Length: 298
Length: 299
Image (cartoon, rainbow over all chains, first blue to last red; front, side, top):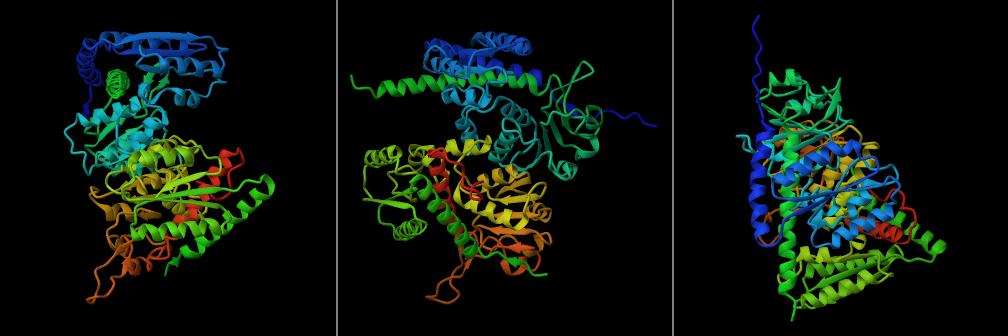
């Protein structure tokens, strides 16, 4: 009997996130120097306990990177019309550069209606149809944070992405599909699998890189992975009080070349990407304002 | 086995007949006539032919056709003023600007100027985003036509393996989106793909949209697969002074011996484009007036 050692290099999402945050802090300082300190407003509605941990984490990370952060909570019974009015107010407020809509929302509030109401230039979560459309057209401005984070992680590996065979498992609108478009824009050949796919294993085994974003613990096992492939696990599931991804870590670590852990993989990079979007949005707004001002006849 | 040859002309005629039927019903029940505005800048002969043909087909299905011809040197502001006017006109439900436009104009900015609800070519960033996020979108005409043919041929597409060749904004990308929405497992391939033959060998559905004559070989096709050829390539003439043959991106003669069904070039996908433009105009009219979407004519 031989000891089976993990062969995969475990990707350190915290370190990647810290590097991005350091760049964000520099850019935030530059913007502040020009009178444009980036400022995020977080909007929570109803029972905020579920999202509280996220909000507090975002606040901590924002403030650490020189991005102002204001957390607002509205009561459960706030109507959709009132919320859209609130968002329109934030859209028009020049002191606000980015708007975050915390989930879960109360059942009577459709999340898409709120996402559409955020001005595309302040859409730091990258959820507005215009933001997604720009990704489809390979014109990345503000992308959905989780998808962008997952792709940024892959880009840190010594792999040539052009021509790479990539399989994305899960075709959600905010993670799976944007990853597919981002990777295709970078020149990868992308296959998108989902719950109706007949043989996920056939496609995942053919791939040099696999992204998993389904929300099912243990979905991807070592026998589904090509030896040496990169595996990016985007799932976040609670099992027996522990946080795990969609990947069966033990078996995949024996086969893959690189693997993200959960927690500590995509998560920290996602929050850092939100901050990156915040400084990017601020710069876009500054340029937009200056451009408009330059064209004004006085 | 020899493949069924999908007759695009007959298919398109059937789509147009269904559009005409629903236009007539809409007029009778609601007094609304769908209207399509086509803007042509300059005097490109091929564009003039397209625009004339679109106008004729629009009137044939009982819609209003509004045609605008602007000189090649029209200032951008003047074109935008026309688009703004059409955006605001309740008689106009679809607007399309015939491309290419002269170099002093930006196709991208023109598309962005057209109201997303009237963008019947489905080219705007907003419509691409709406399609990607599962919202009601205007869908680019050619991929919509391909989808209609595939549904007609295969019924429920769920679980089928589909390969799209080409990643253009006009065809490849929306085609991939539409197939995903119909629950296919979709592989998007393109010029950088390492082993195209291998990807195609796994596919139940192949949509080729690259513009390389007869690039897809017959022995790449999985027996029984449905092959949709969007390519339209003119080969060099075989004899001097002659006209070269028109071929698709698929080696038709070889592929039809293996495939289950295949579209020819010409006479396959081509005729579907205008039919789908009319279907989109009808869809836009329904949405503008709060009526239910036309059945069997949307994505």
